[in-house]
Length: 299
Image (cartoon, rainbow, N blue to C red; front, top):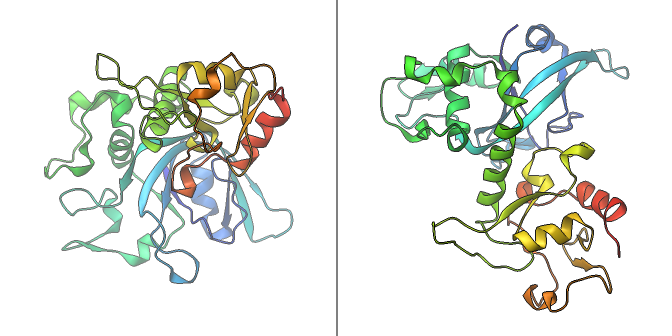
C-alpha cells in the first residue's frame, strides 16, 4: 500500500463525483492500485480548464481508496472509489509558511515548483509528508497548533507528533473525530451564525451557541461535508431534524403550516431566505436539500 495525492479540478471534464469517485487515465493506474486500502489527500490546483486561475491551490480533504475499477465505456480510463471522505477544517496551501513545499517532489529549489511533478493527477506521497499535511488540515481536531504557517525549518515528524501517525483508516472512521471535523467546517463557513435566524450568540465561556446540522443524516448515508451541513441554533436544529423546517434549492425557508411553536417565526430572517456562505463550494448541495424535503419535511 502507498499513500497518494489526487488532484481534482471542478471543471476537469472527467466523470468525478467528489468524495466518492475519482476518474483518471490509465497512466496513473499502478499508483492508484498501490493506494487501495490506504489514505489519500484531495488537492485542488490553481488552474482550471483553459488555464483559468480559479482553484485554491490547496490540500482540502482526506479519504481512503476502497477499490479501483475500469470505466466500461472507455478502455483508457478508470475509477477509484473513495470512502471515509472527510474535508479539512483548514485547507492547506501547497506551500509551507517558510516558502518550501509539503511534497518534496514538487521542490525544484529556490522556491520554484516542479511543473512536471505538479502536473501529475495522482502523485505518490511519503508517509511523513502525508502526516504533516494531515496534521495541518485537521489541526483544530487534533488539538495541536496549526503548523501550516510556521516558519520553522524543522519539518521532520518528531516523537511528540506520534498521534498523527495513527492508522489513517482508524482516524477517518472514528465518529468523534469526524463529528469534530464536520462541526469545525460548518462553524467556519457560517461564521458560527445560525443560517435561519441570523443570530450569533456567544455564551459566557466565549463559545458560539450554534450547532452543525447534517441536512441528510449520517444514518441515512449523508456525508460529513460542509455541503451537507448547515449552521443552526439548538431550537432551530431540533425543528429542522423533525421536518418542521426545510429549504428550497434557492435557499427559501420552508415552514410546516400549523406545526411550528407559537411565536418562533419572529426569530426567522424576515426576508424568508436562509443565509448561506458566499462560496459555492460551501453552500448546501441541492441534492441533499431535495432529500430533506422529500424524506423529512412535513409541509
